[in-house]
Image (cartoon, rainbow, N blue to C red):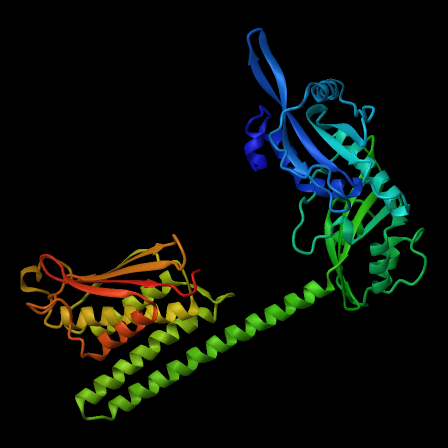
Length: 501
């Protein structure tokens, strides 16, 4: 199914007209639900003929009601009109007046001009399936009356309403949630059963029809409650805005649509929804997120404390080997703490690993480089990594960078490059998103001394190499070492992320 943007690109409408149709389609689900009918939007397009340009039409958008049976069950976007429909579309465009042709069989169609600033830029058709139509009751009669007011506003160029938000987001009320019709004075003229139930939960026990909605709400606001400036305008239907009220443990979202006739406000349509349960769940999630972030913060603090204790303990040892071992353990704990520190500031369990990689690279080089100044570079992007994957990759990078500096530059830069080339450790990352699970390829290269002559890998008996290979194996990856030209080492590893971001 082509998008509305794609279908509108076929027309010759101005950008302002296109925006108007986008806002109409963004809000017409409400109209479809109130009219219990399918809505289709038809656009004129020029067709070059031998005797001059003529206008043709195509179906650009379609909405189905959620309050009743659907008329069109298949995708109809892109259809061309038959000769009979073409006649009515042309007439409505030329006259600017709505038309309801005599129905054939069980179908009734209403052609409504879509007007903007006095010009008919499209035609909306309401398709009613008379055979499967709902039985007429109080709700149906009032919904149809309101929908006819909205159709009249569309033909007058008054709907969609200027400055109004369109569309349905999380918690935004829809027709099925509750409908209230107000008079021009803000008195309730009609309230659907769901709207009455919402007002009852708010605490109103009196008659709903004939009551003043703003008085019902304000009488139940807790003393000292700060009310948003939009609330009075929404409750009286004077502005096409939305707002949310919280009182007595009840959360109500409201949206007002002023009903106009000839440019004068004759009433308003209000949609309202009880979102108390949604807000309660959101508060629970926020509380859980805050708890998780606090846990990461405390884990980070504890790891840093242990690393500091190891450094203190190492200073009391005379054995150089023991001091080095404790220093290595402290550095590894600090690397894991870095991941938890990042997670303690995030709203999810996903982290932007590029920042972590850069911090690991610079910190490790700064600590490990004792004989020479080593430059650092980071190329490519790691992207978002899950916490578990991030910890593994961070440990691998720290070990490889530490190994590159200690063994590549422990005697200083190679003699041939001592004055011409800056010692360098560079990390390159590439995220492969094709398939599942996602793959991450990382290259750690240096221009140091390189691997020992005659070897293709470092000494695997070292603890650092063993840690790297164990972590890569856990990520179902592989690693290779090779000597760079004219000198240096290139370490390349690929891992499969267990929890792709």
